[in-house]
Length: 420
Image 1: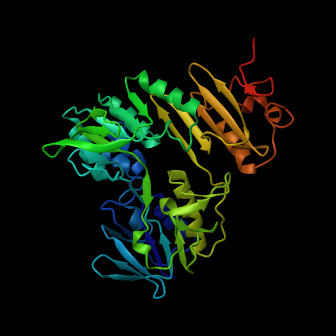
Image 2: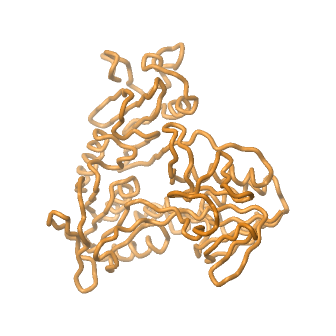
Image 3: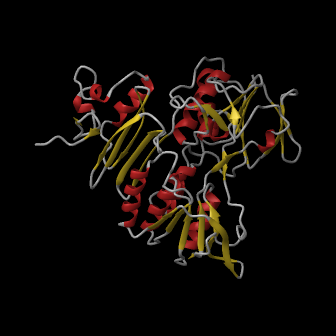
C-alpha cells in the first residue's frame, strides 16, 4: 500500500504516525510546500515575543522522517490531483502515484484586497519567513497596526508588547473574536489590553493602506480617518489551500467536505486539518475548525482509517485557550451573541465567565481569568446530556468542587458568588 501525505502540519504528521502504528513497513511519501517540515504557525507569535527559540517552532526533530521511515520531499508543491489515475502532480510536472492519499495542505492567510497591500511593511503571519520579516523590522521600533481582533491578533499584540512595541488593534466587527466572544467578554478583553497601553478600535472599515516611498505609512478608513503605522500586520483569517483541486472531482465549498472518517467523496482520498469542513457537533453545521487540536485529532482519524482502521471524528466544536498578559482565556463552542437559548454569566473585576445553553444542553462557555473546572464542562458538552443550571450545582449530578471556584446559583438566572 502506497501512502501519500500532502502537508507537514499537525494533521499530516499525526496521520503519518497513525499509519505507522498499523503499517510499520508500507511506503509513506510526505510532500510539503514548506522548506522546513513540522513547524508550528501557532508558535510564531511566541517566537516574535522572545518566549521560544527558533528551534521551538518545530514540533518534531530532524530525525523524525528517518524514525518513521518517511520519504520526505520538502519545498514541493502539488498543483493538481488526477484521481482516476491515482496520481498527484507536482510543480514541474513530476507525478506521484498513491493507493491512499491524505490532503492536509492547511490554509493560507487572507489578505485584504485594498490599495497598498503590496507595500513594504505589510505582512501576514503564517510562515517562518513572515515571522522572520516582522522580527527584523521590530528593531527599527515602528508603529504597529494589527488588522483583526481574533485570537491570533490578540496574542500577537501581547507578544509585541513584550518586545517593547505597543500596537493598535483595528477590528472590522463590533467586538473582538466575534465567532467566540460575546460583547461583554470583548469589553473585558479590551479593558485588559487597554491597561497595557494597547488601543483597540472596533467597527473599523479600512479603505486603503497608506504608503510613502514604497513603505507602509498607515491606513485610511472609509470615513477618512487615518492611523499611522510603519508596520501593518494582517490577522484577518485564513483560506483553505484547495485551489489545486479545482479539476480533481473532490467536493469542496470553502474547504474539502469530509465525513466522520475524514474521507472525501473520492475513494482512497482523505483530508484533514485546516483544509477541511467538518460537522460542528454543537451547531450541526459545517465549520472550518482551524485549530491545532482539531487538526491533530483529524489526522489521527484519517491516518488510522487509511491503514484499515475504523475511527470516527467526534466532539468537534470550536475551542481555543491561551494566556493574555498572564490572564487565562478558554473558550469553547460558539459563544458569540447567541440567538435563542439561555446563559449564566458572572462578571468580576478580574474575571468573566459564561455558560451557554441551547435546547437544555451546555452549548459552550467563556472563561476569562478563572478556568478551574473547564475540563468538566468540556466533558459535559461532549456528552450532550440534558442539564439545567440547577443540575450543575446539584451534588446528585455535578459535584460543586468541579464547578469554577466561587460559582453558585441565585435567582435562576445568574452565576453569582455566594455570600459569606
